[in-house]
Length: 296
Image (tube, rainbow, N blue to C red):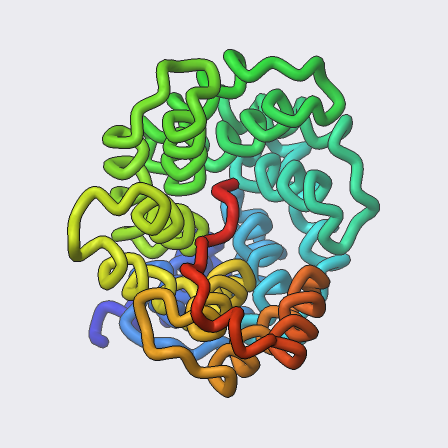
């Protein structure tokens, strides 16, 4: 706290870097000593006004997250556009990310790609995953699964869990490589252990489909629950499916409905058909051996 007091004194004289450091001190996500969002925002804004080179990108993040200020994506984007002109790689990536997803701005993957390529050149790991998606699905570029594989590999080497997950999908399905269930499980597990819900679901489905060990159903259930509890709709839908069919758990229409409804609330329209099937389930259907959803 004495260090913070010294920084405050210096910041109050108008020192731009001191203002920036005080803002970071009030933000635990940036290694601060405490979380005081309003103070963090005010000092970051002061740092921007004093011309600190990193502050504008961070101020945009505060607007995006609603940290110490009302959430405002348009103001976040305005900050990043200014910062990108100054050469800020995080700002360039954030702009590309929002253009890719259409979050707070009109979706424009064509404009996003050069920004993501700039970020990838600077080794921003998530940029490789998004560029891989472009080439895997032919989004504003020629579809090329080999190029996608290269981007996913680069992203995975930098530790991006989405890239690791997608590499697992390629290995499982034999896309741009020889099919290897063993490699797929290794990759899924690596990303799943780091909290990636897509990988958790894929690992679970892989274990249910392959059933290489007697404990696979139990392990799959644990991963599905982790994904569902993170709010991942595919995990919620799959957990509902397990309760509806009794695969690895005691059959419970009540719990199946609970998890189906949570997935439906997030816009997964496929769940409506599963809810209808649950209501109209014939008695003999309970006796059939259930099968997990098709692997994606």
